[in-house]
Image (cartoon, rainbow, N blue to C red; front, side):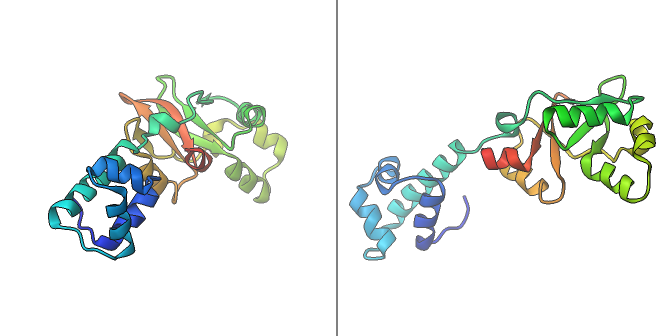
Length: 185
């Protein structure tokens, strides 16, 4: 169990979206008792404090979503040897910003991203030549891959550094999570 103070009770309750009544019910206490604790008008006994904290932690663990619950399941991808134009077509058709590149065994070997393509154009690459290039010539390393049971708070932390996270089940990529998926969760 984490270390908590009385002042944490209200913050934790609100972060979990619980009312005082709901917390009281979970902890086996009265709503007015919870209100008095949160207002600082009484100090609870240690045993009641533990009841409240245990109730909050139980509610917290029930509210934890995992990657499989928020990922985009219909993963669009291209294979090694595909033309960049195929990746661009997928991105335009499905309004997505990145496409994984898979090898013949279905393993992710790289990513084609809008930002990488735009960067290539800024560097002076002719758009027609770029479109006719193979994806291996412009792909970036793959985004991080997490197991489908990874809690979304961990995925959100990864998204501070990457545009997307791929989701796997038994080593096979089955979905993708972007920042917009986190916001929808």
